[in-house]
Image (cartoon, rainbow, N blue to C red; front, top):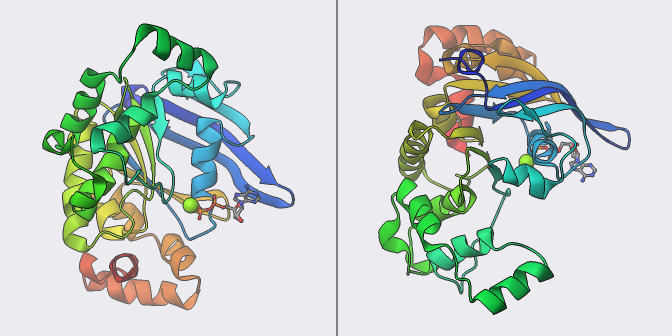
Length: 277
Ligand SMILES: Nc1ncnc2c1ncn2[C@@H]1O[C@H](COP(=O)(O)OP(=O)(O)O)[C@@H](O)[C@H]1O
Ligand SMILES: [Mg+2]
C-alpha cells in the first residue's frame, strides 16, 4: 500500500535546509506510511542526516512537516518527540556501563530539573513495561540485564533501535543503524525491521548497505546534493541510471548499467557497491 493510500504518518513537503552557502536539503517531499519501511539513500554528503535533523527539529528548515496530519514544523524537538516520532543518531553509541534495559531507560528520562525533583519525591522508576515492550519488538527481552559488550554486534544495533521505540513511538528515523554489520548480520537486522514495521510503526531507513535497503524497503528515495533525484520501488531504483551515476559519480557508468542490467539484478553496480562497504 502506498503512503498516499494509507494516509501518510509522516509527510515532509518542500523541506529545505541551508547551511551558509550549502543547500543541504533542497525542496524535499517525502512520505512514510504506518507500517511502511521507506529507504533514504544517497552518497555521503547528500543530505540524509540533515533531513532527519530537519524533520525531528534539530536543525532549522523551511517547508512543512506533518505527523498524522498535524503540522509540527513549528514544534521543538521535544514536542515533536511527543507526537510519536523518534530518531537514532548516526554512530549512536550505547552506554557500555549500563545494562540494555538501563540504556533504554535513559532514553525515556524526562529532561530537566522538574523531572529530577519528581523522581526524587515520587521515587519514580524507569517504566519497566514500556522498556519491555520495546525489547520485545526487537526480540531482545532476554538481554535486558546484560551489558552491550556481552551482545553480538547485530544485537547491539537492535538495542539502538529499541531505544528509539520506547514510549509509544509511531515513527522511527534510523540514521545508518546497521553500519558495520556483515551481510549475514545485516539480513537478520532487516528481518527485525520488518517485524517492527508489521506492528504498524513507520520506518525511515538510511543505510549504505544496498542489499539491506533494496531487500527490506517498500519504497526508496534517492538524494543527491540535497535533492530527491529518484523515488519508487526498490526494483525501479536499482535500475535507474541517474541513481547509479549519482552513486558512482561517473557518466560512463550509465553505459555499464545497461550492460549489467542484462546480467540480472545481482550484477547491479549499486548492489556491488553496497556489499563492498
Ligand atoms: N551543521 C552543519 N553545518 C554546516 N554544514 C552542514 C552541517 N551538517 C551538514 N552540513 C553539510 O550539509 C551537507 C549534507 O550533509 P549530511 O546531511 O550530513 O549528509 P549525509 O548524511 O547524506 O552524508 C554536506 O555538505 C555537509 O557538509
Ligand atoms: Mg549522514
